[in-house]
Image 1 (cartoon, rainbow, N blue to C red):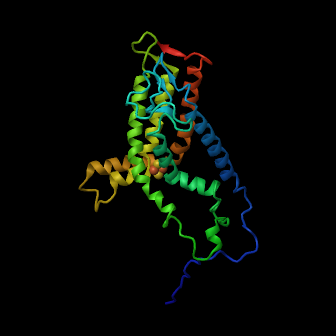
Image 2 (image 1 turned 135 degrees about the horizontal axis):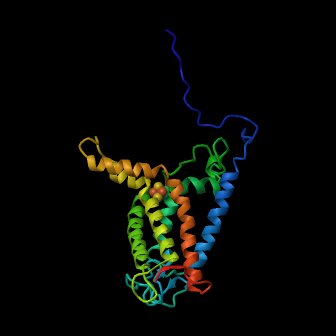
Length: 276
Ligand code: FES
């Protein structure tokens, strides 16, 4: 009988003179990611610090970038969860001070976004079979991945997930409030639908999280004794296959919802009313 030996994978890059042997446009995906993420961050930063055009009093529309509104400067009716932040603080303190830092942490530590910004912003690496550009790669043995400070902080993702779930509940409350008619009773407008689409997709993003999958189905020796958790795990697993899509689509729906509320609030156009 002949015995086949398999070499252990090399820790070093193959000694080829070319930077990469890839001939396809591997750089296109990280470039598109870079442009989309950079544009979104600029838009979200400007909007969350603007301090205006975030609330439509007539229909009770509140943009997610100001939810929950916790500044003393929040417009009457827009702050259902109390105000803890004094008015007249510097402009860069957002009105949604208790949610935005956690939502930023949630997205920054998300597995999907990690992959995306490691590739698009840090080029570590920008694609498979393309050299890593990080300084640590230049020093043999210095690369530690996410096992040391500061990247070990990515492990806090599970805690951000819990807080993001609470903030999704607040966003759901905002969407319920948006069933507000012009005469004060029940009403539905295009803004109501936009807020609901956004919050449903936000729940899709939150519940498809890898941490959520672990919370509902992890740390068990077998599923047969836990049929409810098994069912939950299978549902979350189905959502989890689309986690990257939820991550990207919710960037779009968040910006769209905010822009719609801002334009109606600023009287650029009227809300399209379906009922009352
Ligand atoms: Fe993306 Fe948790 S892995 S939100």
